[in-house]
Amino acid sequence: MDPVKNPYTPNAGSRPPELAGRNEQLEQFRILVARLRDGQTEQSVIAKGLRGVGKTVLLNAFEDMAESEGFLTYYHELTDESSLVQELARDTERALAMLRLSDKIVQRVRDRLAHLKTIRLTGPEGIGIEVDLRNASEGTVAADLTDLFLELGAVAKEKERGVIFFLDEIQFADEMHYRALISALHRCNQKGLPISTAAAGLPQIPRLTGEARSYAERLFDFPTIANLDVQAATVALVAPARAQGVEYEEDAVELALDWTEGYPFYIQQIGKHAWNRAAGSPITRADVEEALPATQVALDRAIYEVRVQRATANERKYMRAMAELGEGPYQSGAVARKRGQASTALSPVRQRLLDKGLIYATANYGYIDFSVPRFAEFMRRYMPHQAPRQKRGRSGNGKR
Image 1: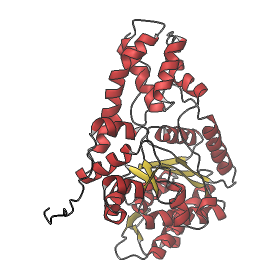
Image 2: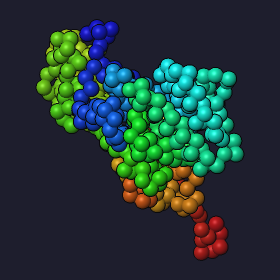
Image 3: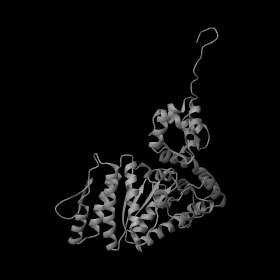
Image 4: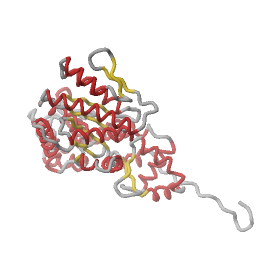
């Protein structure tokens, strides 16, 4: 069929034609926005899950919902080089400008923020903000960001507006910056101010959040975003084609869902390639079977190869040892034994993989897993297993 009219969208963060299986999370966020608008408080949201399950898509849907209710929204995709506090301060400057404050309120805000140490107001008038975190203590950073949020929240409430910060890849936030954000949100929540955060991150984010602040797990809700159940996966596959008058044979749907295991990104890929190979409606099982090799190649290029290329040779060997153990989660000690090395010797390699987001530490202490679904399967295809060399001992006659 015509690839130009292909309804599937296997792109990073692109909203699919049918956002199936996420009604519970959308309703949860609708309630958050409505409560903030009405002067109530509500837990901020951090969606957790593996890569490719649609966390970014959901975050974008949240942003659209907030904007439709008149909220000011600011979106960031964090990296390990991001300065979260600087980004939030810059967003606050933009928000204060968007609120169109009177000269009297501007002066009030300037007076109340004049004491800040790390966040400096610039210019003789208006509110420009500069951040200097050099040699700043954690307590000072947290206090300054808190006071900044309190002033933003106060004037937003006066203007009957709200502000929501959207943070993707939240696990990359600097620990000190993350703690400062939690402290600032906590204080705004206590004051009933219309400021909140919606974020997305890998499955370890609840643990990291709890470690950041003892009360943080009560400040956030952590919905799990995972693969779709059969009903939702069927809708995600069938509905986009049906909207264009194209149906699927029942056994074609069965094969596609079995192969994708309900992962949203995989469904978009198989749908795209099955559509391009089908002569017309209905899309048959043969069309899906013919689409599978191209779908696998596309997935390898789009989601697997780009990640494995970020790893060093030693890191790839570590991940290949994980894959050799089957499906995760994996005990770190078992991976070390598969590599023929001590766990302590491999700790730096494991930590680098954690820092890069290629693996994550599960809720069970000492266990790790891949951050992308079916990555073990990919590693077994991509990299032949190399058994570690055995150390040669001395023979009975004294020769090596």
